[in-house]
Image 1 (cartoon, helix red, strand yellow):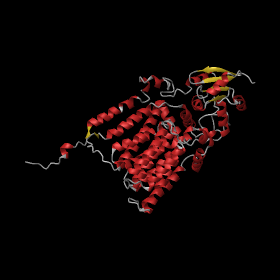
Image 2 (spheres, helix red, strand yellow; image 1 turned 135 degrees about the vertical axis):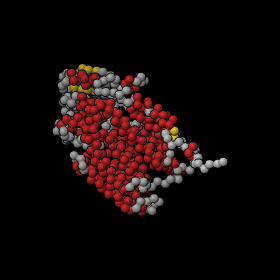
Image 3 (tube, helix red, strand yellow; image 1 turned 60 degrees about the horizontal axis):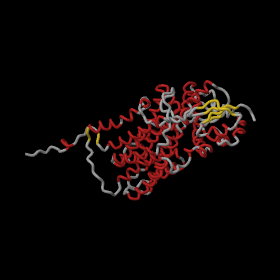
Image 4 (spheres, helix red, strand yellow; image 1 turned 180 degrees about the vertical axis):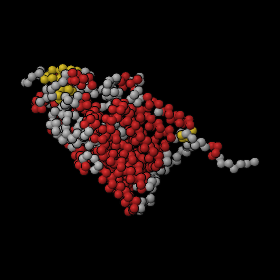
Length: 510
């Protein structure tokens, strides 16, 4: 006697996770572990936190120098990322440095989860999604600093995913109406908002070309016009900020600022040194090979995205992260269409895989900032972060924590300081004021040149006299040539020293 019951009733379990999903879980859990142990470098975080505090306490956004004695305190300065700074300070008030770092970790993980989801949608494979998400994560390793840029990652992915799915006819027109709303948030948190307009423009032009050459899957002209309309609305949304239309001048000035472009490493083109930069060049080679052999032919929009963001990444290391977010989902589709025999896996779902996924995230949970200092981490790691200090966990050892405490007890003088130290000084001892700090575009190019010369021990006394500096806070390794000069100079005396910093005072004139 036979039955006609469907076989899947007995063989398929729809509860739990498929083993293929574990691939992306492994990548995200591993990357999250690395992110969570990344030290908080002093350069870019602390001065942003101070601006957030001032916005909170004063009820307005500063628009002048405020913290540097080497410039007039009323020297204009645009704090374009005011909302990002304000949000960081609100988070700091609620949960101290631990919650700020945790927020950074969550923002990054959510971003790369979206990269994996988009790659899976295009390739229909979590394995391929994991394969391309991994290098995208590596490309971000030089962009893990806690700073307002963190708030740009999710808006960027929202623009990319919604526009991609709209052009693939997977979502209706009304979904794109969320983009101008997102832009209102984005334009006030970070200057990378301009990339949202770039994305809309690229999709609009790319889909116009796709229709003109009559490529299969082209959008109706009304849908292309809808993308253009969303671009107009998103552009209008950008003026909903304290700078109004001048926000574009702010971005342009920043991107053409001579000190930033010429002196700061992250604004320089990526060289094949370091993990992230090396991966950038490896990915270019891999993409070239994959697209040669793949049956998939990218759309005009995808070609414009790849070429445009490759050029952007080539122009500055800080842009490499955007290249990875854009190109990896496209590469996933090309890999899926390679003409090779593929192994077929039966992706059965079960609750055991849920348990495995949970266990994979256990190490990630225990290295979160509330618990990390209780862990028996290797001595090599312990040497690069401060331990049990009032500021909080994971503070980079190059932060002049003890030296600034000394300056609190021994205030006074016009201090010439290492640039990165300036950020921490602004946060912990704003009344002391700094010679220079990471607000690079605030200072004239000539002052940066003088800073370089002083650090090299070149005409340092003449230059310090020119500015009126009579105390020095320096980093013994980054400014070792200046240290050597001061040690041989009778008019300077060391008044404080620890492993991270030295303080010198001037005794008399020559």
